[in-house]
Amino acid sequence: MKYLFCTDGSKNSFVALEAALELVKNGFEIDIFYLKDEKNFFIKLYNALTMKIHMSKDEMKNFHKIVAKAQKIIQKHAHFMGDTYFRYGDIDSLINHINNNFYNMLIFGSHNYTGIKNQLFGFSRKILDGTETSAFIYRGSMPRHHAQQKKHFLLCIDETYQTLNAVISFMKNFNTENDISLITVTPGFFQYSSESSLHGYGLEACLDREILLADKKLDEIERILCHNGIIVKSKIHLRGNPSEEILDFMKQDFDLLVLGSHARQGVIEFLFGSVSKNILDYSNLPILVIPTKTSS
Image (cartoon, rainbow, N blue to C red; front, top):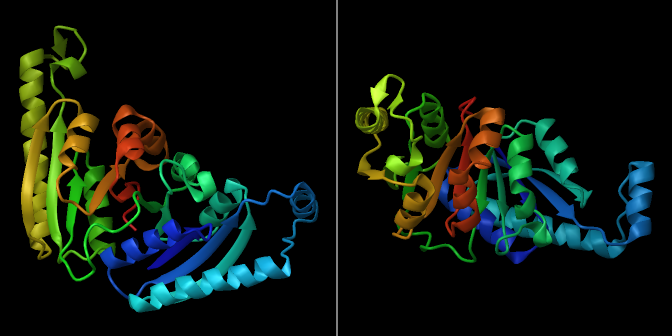
């Protein structure tokens, strides 16, 4: 397993690294990608024209400090240092790096509702749209619980087969000795078209069918988790607007929200759709987004 820690050197990005490594299993290799917003026009132009990276002595010293700080956190949580990279400000360079290397998960944080020096989290959907890699996105300023305390994960489940891939990926990467709850939301009447029938069913019958399918999927995922020695603490089935219901339920004591997305096109459809867009915009919890095309 190999992760990529994306940082601008800020305190919050290291809080993100600490939070992520407290939740995942031990023994992974972690690369460091330092993305700096270069404001000097001439240095930026030189780098673009020469395809080289000019670093001053002070910047080189700062880069080594960042690497040393990250290495301390990585080793503290029984992981291994990988390679280190430095790039100036273009988010596309990060996306290209991710796509040219195989990573099981990306780790990055946001200062508030924006990201690397007010850039990275603003580009988070672009990163997710431009890659097929799971991403741990840290929101907030400090971990909810101390490292010694048991964590509580909330897995979002839908009726699609891709949900299983997301669950498999989650089991491979995260410490499943923590508490795990499953949540699904079936739309109410107002989420459906006003047409009198859907797929040959009357509206009421269609809603009942969706509820039945969602309950079956919750039971199926619980069986799979139990088969792998993972006990589900609770199963939650809500009715209404999915993003509103999930955001409201998340106000309870959780440490991580897990969302699946349906590969690249699904990322566009799912993440830019109202459900995940609202969750990403308004959640104060760390969020794990798992593209479900693969189960890495």
